Amino acid sequence: MMRLFRAAAVAATALLFAALASAPAAAADASFANHGIANPPVGTLGLNAATPSVAAFSDTLAGHMTGLAGVTAPEPRSLEAQVAVLAAVETRSAEEDCLANAVYFEARGESLEGQLAVAEVVMNRAASGRYPPTLCGVVVQRSQFSFVHGGVIPAADRSSAAWRRAVAVARVAQAGTNRLLATGVLWYHANYVSPGWGRRLSRTNRIGAHIFYR
Image (cartoon, rainbow, N blue to C red):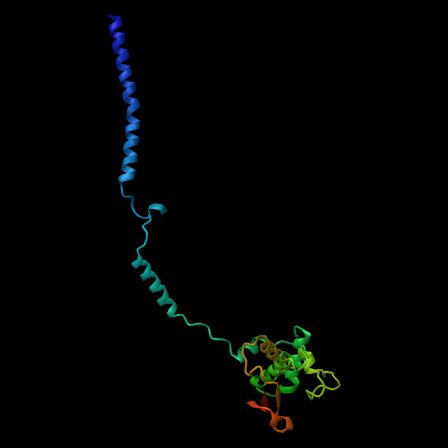
């Protein structure tokens, strides 16, 4: 009798362990299957994000371009605005100093355009291959600029507003942002004189009291 009871208990225990062992596997299988079949909500995970359609992308791009169409490109600064920003007492180099002196002594009574044109002639000469290759060399060249005596540039009044403007004009000319003259313009004279060489050249501009030639 005891043997029969023990055999029944062993069999029952075996059946219980078998049932417990099979239950988690079934649950796991069901969970995996459900994850593979279910449609998770878009945006829950990055990998589940839907790929935008071509039409949607086109609409987004069109909206972006429409927005850009309403944006106005910044206008370049006027000469007056640049001079106001760049005016200074100290020059940044010997070359800039020579150019500012040419502007100051040759055209400080002229408009900013007239001053810039004089600076551009000096720069044109230095780049032409027909004159000294430096700005200082052009300015102090013999018999070219009347304010230079014996290769020496006189002292400018560096405390004046005219000098600060001349420095600014020299910087604008070097930057090339407001060009007035063609690169071949190498000569000018005041309108109250009539040098013989002017008849051999092509007149290009008159700015203030100066007439320019190439």
